[in-house]
Length: 85
Image (cartoon, rainbow, N blue to C red; front, side, top):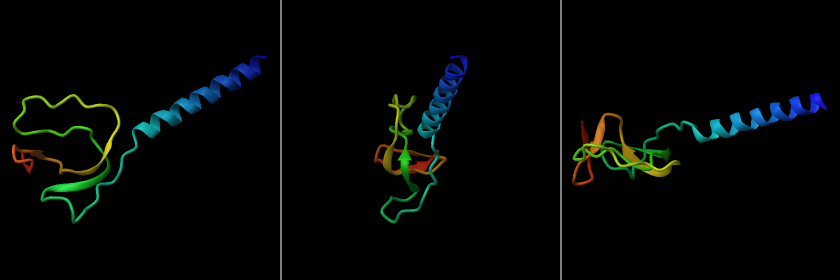
């Protein structure tokens, strides 16, 4: 009985670790000709982006979305263009 409980706990821990790592997968940024200047394509990017004209970023939902995003060190201006911070 004790061995079965230990095995069950071990399996639950392994499953939990697997689920946690799937949520935090880091994808490579890729160049896409369809992205605007100063943007890169991400298969799993943030659900909200930094906007230069806002003091605080929007609250982001969990998860990710696919598309073109500002490169690191850039933010979106009021014309929705990525400009240097």
